[in-house]
Length: 444
Image 1 (cartoon, rainbow, N blue to C red):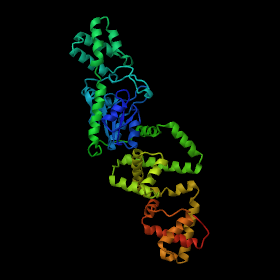
Image 2 (cartoon, rainbow, N blue to C red):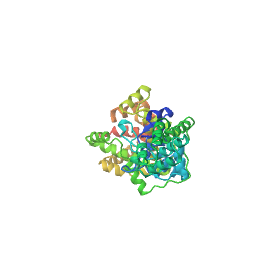
Image 3 (cartoon, one colour):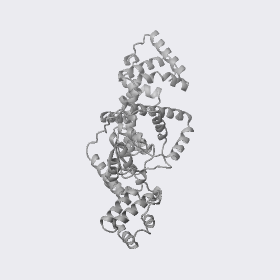
Image 4 (tube, rainbow, N blue to C red):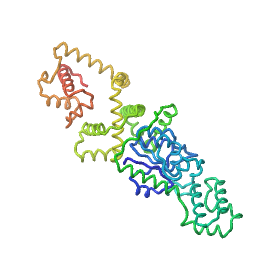
């Protein structure tokens, strides 16, 4: 799945999914758009969003998302506000609410704000949005249910109410002394069938546009600006990088901490991936389908996963779905691409990494002893023939004797994953090891 939509009280998830093949996420808050991009979504729709007690979605994370080639839509509520502010940068605003904010007809954020219930019960609206009240009163006057004076009185009173107190009952109560009782009674009789829900309609229109975009070949979003990495942005992505499921993550981290060696190795790997993602973002690396396919193929072959059933079993064991696998592999592409572009720089830090593990001295001494032994015994240059074994026997010796593992079915993928430049370079390394071990009881 390539599209995600942030929804709350404006539209039911089921309706949203019936209009477009999207993953429905809770109302957006600060950091959520960044995380959605990191999770592989290439189209993001924003409808509802948090504010006040929860930091609102930040303009800069939307700008960053678009600079990464992601199409970002906004409509109806928080999405319309952000789209009006960022339309000139490429955010796609949809619907009446967006147009009114973009034109300047509406200016106040409270026009779209509502109070709603919790997610567990479907975000039920506990107040009415001002944009809906405006539209409804306009329709009521057009239908001659209320007159122009009542329309203006009700509209003005609604605007004086705090957004959390806006309801048609409270509006009517506030003008009860100035509007005929029968007119208000007629209004409430007409309301169930005549009420406008502009936010709902705009959200549906946005989803229809997302669906239309998804039906064609999806090309990355292009922008005219250069995204600047500021200190504030760095702080945001550090915070946004915290997993949304803290409880599950903490349980996983506890298990990991109980295995000190795996803990150190995993955190080192995770740090490398985080830095690679930052580097890819800074360099604005573009998606490459051919690279993705190559990395995906190499990833499974290097783990001896060839058959479909084997891959499915691995996915089940790693608790990863097909969409999550796609997102994971996109991050794997970023990781491997960034590593390859910084190969020489990474090599300069290998001694530090080995010393941190307490392994530098041992490996360095062994490399020197091996080179000296091979030189003194005339075994350089070493090749398969010098060992007296055939290529298959030498490879089998290495995996059985040195690694106590079976030979991988796809040895080429294994060699590439180790960083050898060619299969010949790998075999020469094995030959040197075989010859040296013939005169040494040392082991790797």
